[in-house]
Length: 182
Image (cartoon, rainbow, N blue to C red; front, side, top):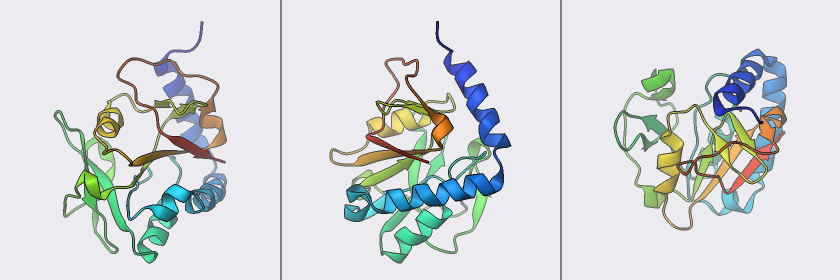
């Protein structure tokens, strides 16, 4: 019998938190280069990135490059209730504050319409080879990804130790279209 979602989360979160910072940054740079070369990123006019939390792949340089290229950049704001993630504009020099779950978000929230997003860059605790994603267990990204307009693409970012052969799944779990890792 395989590991449960809770067991996988616990194991991978420990590796994320104990990974050496220089290793995290080196691999984040490799992942950034891979993402910026994808047709999905090149084509996208609007991109939603996450703000790295708890050892996740660092997205700061990706965000800077997207802005430099003139793309609309949004980040998720987590809320309680039925719609758990709302994309908000993330222009340069925006002050951040800790939001729900302790994740950084813009202090001033300017909503971005889902139709303005061509690409959503997604964090995860683990991914499998089919793109199935294991998050933190709140269902925030699962419900958000289900609402994306047709044609919008989701790409998960991960370190190699976060890629597993398979993951336990339920009917509410939503896969990403693609995973980039290093």
